[in-house]
Image (spheres, rainbow over the protein chains, first blue to last red):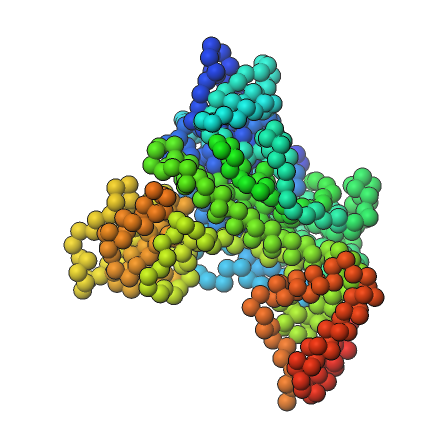
Length: 542
Length: 64
């Protein structure tokens, strides 16, 4: 893994070349099994995941560069685990700023702090902060390594005809227009999705009127590496403020301005500096990026429209206070990738694709619920609501119950799917592993004594994890279905710390069926080949 | 010995807060104050212990 190059100068932008595709010179309209629209983090993750699953992918983007700007900075543990499976996780963690502590202040007084990963034995940290363009650069580098991933810059979708067996796209390029047919189309084209507009689809949800100033500043400072959030600090009276460290001595500062703020005037450098000086003085700093935002919490009613499937911001949007935007989009991509690969290979039917929508709408609704509650707390809708909020803040230093109600953003955790793909437990299991959730990571030891982690060693397909039972009758051959990998804890890997046993409530003979997206879909106290086969069929919705 | 419980008792404090927010959504401050007064009386009676009520009043008066 090579380290990411530091930003050259203040504008960190990577340029790519438009190249004429063979499809543009073909006599007939070329047909592809899968086209992904949008080469942001979500589209790139989906395209790479599907290409790794042997699906040839055409990935198109209307730009020819990765832009700077104040977009995503916080990448969650689950996102990093996914990106690790895609081959860029270690590079990103090495480059990013690792953090797990959050502090919440009221006025200038610390109300409480929280630790987002209080336990050991996970390969990936709770969060890293990393500018989105660095993450995109790492994913583009990865995509360019893949022979079955065709990344086309300056390809803008201008037309879409839905068909029973796919979609026909009209694409505009510097060389003019051409058309391609896609058996399946993934729309990862962001909050202002062209595909969504072309299909005439609307969002349901709410918009918040409060405006927020987001500034990235370059500054040499030794403020702590933690998420710091203030309600009504003396440096920004009456409103909230958030501060976060990024690599390259860049700091994200997020200031609530209220609903009446003038979005144009507030971006004037002098005005921005007047606000920032109060926070950052006496440090010298340069403005890297300034913008004004309002937030929405909303989603499409359906994510799957026949052969057109929406992921990420194209499907759902939240406010940024829980790191639930790009993170949930990458989790959409991971949920969809293995299902679409199985569908394209004829291993599963449309019911498996429907389960993408069912599971990720659950996740989107959870994200929207948390995000709406946080934004309600930060930006009360009326004087009456503000009084209640202020009462919580006033009581918070004195009463624990009030501290628990203080909401500066509940940070992203993966959804636990209540899913038809899961086989209900027949026997009770304790531990932190949950049906329908990603496996908790755990440290393991290889046969040669070297240290590793559970998630880093999963196959990427369906997998049975079996806990060796020296005394039991399972000692002979373990029959697992074709295409299902088998890992034996106690043979392939040793659980020397006991953390695997603790997190999975593992007893000798315990058997776990893991989906290709590392989610637990069935578990038993004893290995039973017929039960495993049934659970596997169920997880593929066959 | 204080009898007032200030430890968090709701399994989901955000949901409890939301219920209180939604109760006052679209109310004026005067209407919300009237709602709060009724809520105080209802909850005080539910608690039913004068000592606890007095402790709660004292805590509320400390709030800034």
